[in-house]
Length: 273
Image 1: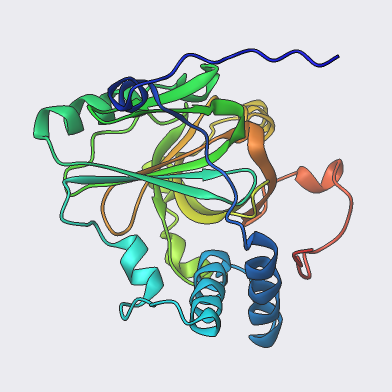
Image 2: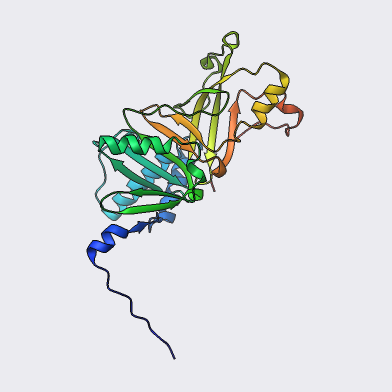
């Protein structure tokens, strides 16, 4: 014999004040993914255009279904700041992207101060609230956070880092672009970081040149042994990578002496499933 329990009726005011939003995959996620893969293969399998492939696939599917599409270039639409003072993209390990916004100056400042804490991803939930709703996202599911604003806050960089900024392009730039200045006690390197959700970021990192061989080994061994990887966005704002959700990092030029313990192989290609 089945038993039933009646649920209390919730008012619209109560629901509005207590809604907990967990990002869900779009209903046509698999179709978008297949189209994005075809786009990736059609342009020769070049890495670094993951987001563009996905957005183009979305637009193609909208056209097929007769849904309205955006006239603005998708990549430009995402990379530019909207009319709000701040837009916040949370990129998850399942490949989904959830966007928030804030236009109140005081709230923007509070949000940015909370984002730049080194322990951002250590909390169980990342909670975002407004007068309309509350959204809670498990921190372990977040690959990357992008906060676009014209007034970014100063970053708390890992020990030995002097700067980290997003770079453009589909391949590593020429080594001459690194402006290596060992005499000034600093050097540059490029890092390509991939996450579980197939998000990819290329960074130009400026670091302090280690004085001894032992210090070089420490820097190499603990390069990603940090609670968060912060960087500046080239279009204005900051990015924050969750190191726990990194699937691969390629650094150029290679760390000295790494060949002593590493498998001797050069990167050829990386193909999405």
